[in-house]
Amino acid sequence: MSKIKTPQAIRGTQDIFGADAEAFAFVVETFERVRKLYRFRRVEMPVFEKTEVFSRSIGETTDVVSKEMYSFEDRGGESLTLRPEFTAGIARAYITDGWQQYAPLKVATHGPLFRYERPQKGRYRQFHQIDAEIIGAAEPQADVELLAMADQLLKELGIAEGVTLQLNTLGDGDSREAWRAALVEYFRAVKGELSEDSQERLEKNPLRILDSKDPRDRAFVADAPKIDDFLSAEAQDFFAAVTGGLDAAGVAWSRNPSLVRGLDYYRHTAFEFVTDRLGAQGTVLGGGRYDGLMESLGGNPTPAVGWAAGIERLAMLVGERGEAKADVIIVAEDDAVIDHALRATSALRTNGHASEVIVTGSARKRFDKAVKAEPRAILSYASRDGIVEFKLKATPDMYEVITRIVNEFR
RNA sequence: GCGAUCGUAGCUCAGUUGGUUAGAGCGCCGGUUUGUGGUACCGGAGGUCGCGGGUUCGAACCCCGUCGAUCGCCCCA
Image 1 (tube, rainbow, N blue to C red):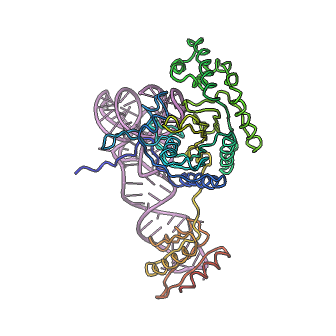
Image 2: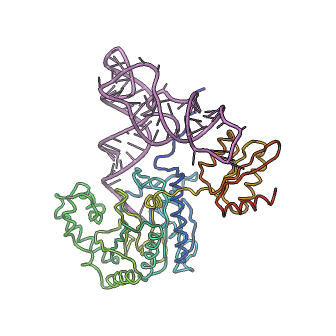
Image 3: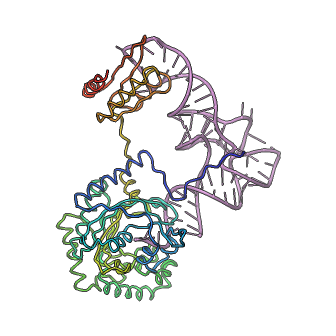
């Protein structure tokens, strides 16, 4: 019989463990705490949806739909897709579950998302995000609230240093279209001098030329038409209210006129918190206003704004998070005292002390394991001439507490 | 989809111009001191050097292919 080959993990998935898992948990716990401070309500969403939920909202614009989604047919022949983002599913639920009644609705969630991409630093096929949305709020103060929450989150994670909030406006639908037309005209005139990629973008997604990394493109980006010259009075007022609100709320920001969104449903505010500490993946948290999304899913026109952030990237910035040391390690120095050790362990845990019991190896090795674990206290049991005795090494405060607990059942 | 770099014990890595039975640390298992002290010391198990071909008297090392990983490009909802 040939040896069984262990199946390997799927490309782009991760088995997160130890200090990395602690950092991951720290990000999620901090998010949960901050989200409650801002009174965002928790939602749990399905991990997959009908493919249309995503394809309709994303539109035909890019090869995102055809190439980057994990889609498959179920047994009934229906095309389903593992969620590549939270927003579309939440928007669908807003319509199908009658959440209009709660508008303006502030919701937050987190969990795994799936995109069929080549993995690289901070990018995985199954990755995880935290997400916050305000649906049914047209006022710029909603944008401010959302950004203030993001800002506080990054500060409480201790990673605000070196992270900057970049802000832009895409204007309303008409502003955006006029700007886009001007950009196409401008870049078309110099098409031959652009990078090959940007010549492609000119046809498929001209706004993206603005954040091209190619120096040949960057030379022209500086003098490209600015959205500011195409903004309607309303759009100007809206953006001014957002920036003014941020200043009032004490949120630092900087204008980035090249910051764009690829999808058509985005309007007005677009933002990214960016760092230079994550290689090619500089965006730590991003979002914007998506007033056009609900209609693309067959709902009533509904203003909305939201953001999402990759937990893996935040966890990388958070850095090593040690696993907590045990309060008490209980050592059964020989097998005759294992039951005593188990009773003590149980009592200590019941009283809220993180405890672990060691019962294998020689007496010396058992104790050595306890010492290496660096607990606040070591409680060791041994039998001598048939009599069970225990010894305790602990800090003075722990000594008293443990002695009291252990003596209760002696 | 494209490019660069890398694949040696469970983990982190050595391995000198290609030259005997491929090493270390950690971890694991066993042993030594029967002790108001112990995180030490000694020993052992564990590797067809990612996989498949080729060159050579001889390959972990050189060449080709393949699979995988990492980083970057494209894309980024």
